[in-house]
Length: 139
Image 1: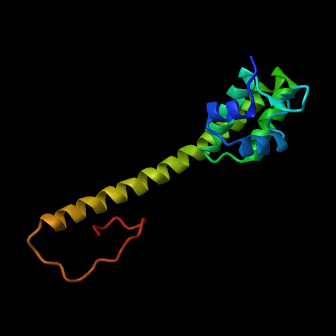
Image 2: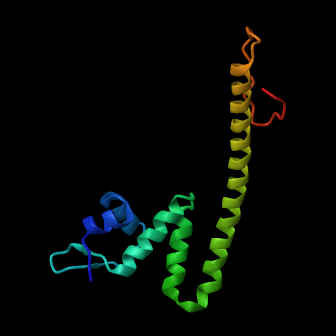
Image 3: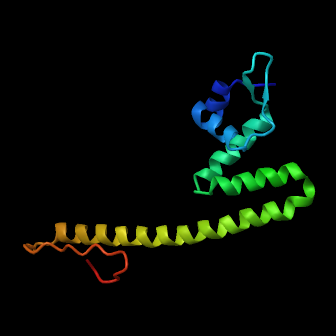
């Protein structure tokens, strides 16, 4: 079964423009065209686009995706190299997750503080303008 770019776009949630961009970047080298020159997408192409979309949400560089594609085209002897790229990116994601968790905790702490102020009968006239993500003190 084949799909048009519009159908592929709807299936993976990417614009047709983005799909064309990915093709130009070499991320869809096996994409075929019909007799009139229109792109046709197989189920495998849709799955690959979904994989690209998923990884792009994690901020993986296009160069890393291109390496994965190039290695894939070389054959199964590159499985370890492809796996290594993903493991390295996973480490980057884990560090980013730790940073986001820390920021989330700071926001939660500030919201609790605001709730406490709201419930408090004490009238605060001095604004507290400390919004550092590095400070552990109550703000």
